[in-house]
Length: 200
Image (cartoon, rainbow, N blue to C red; front, side, top):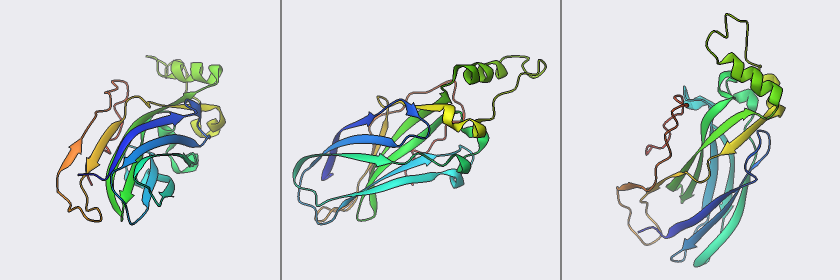
């Protein structure tokens, strides 16, 4: 049995500029007294090719946690573009919001994040570069690394995938079972989205 049950997570200021902080309002219920704080963490998946491009955007310690319903806002800085391959700056990736107790991760919430150009001219240039025969016509995509300030992101906040892990709480023994509660949508246009939701 989980001592912490998350009832709602709202992604605030969404959509936003790529360089803006991420902001969440998290509401959860605590079913029994806890001796330690909860650790929340937000991770940005920089590339489907390697975990070495993942960025831990921020961590937040919450506590002492009273029994009952609790709510707080969690703000995390935007990822550093310099640590993301240029080819992965535009398109779809994933952010992972996790919570741990006593260094034991017990919930992982994954969201798809789509990044595109907010500037109409850059977006038109990028879209044209994807058309058939674009290379022959000399149509090239803008350099995303040089246009970070023109990029906007949108978090698919209504379609998270939530995975729960059974852990050892203060007085409740752990179980080895893992329960997946909800599935993220399949985006046909995003074949490079990494599958980061499996249990570690």
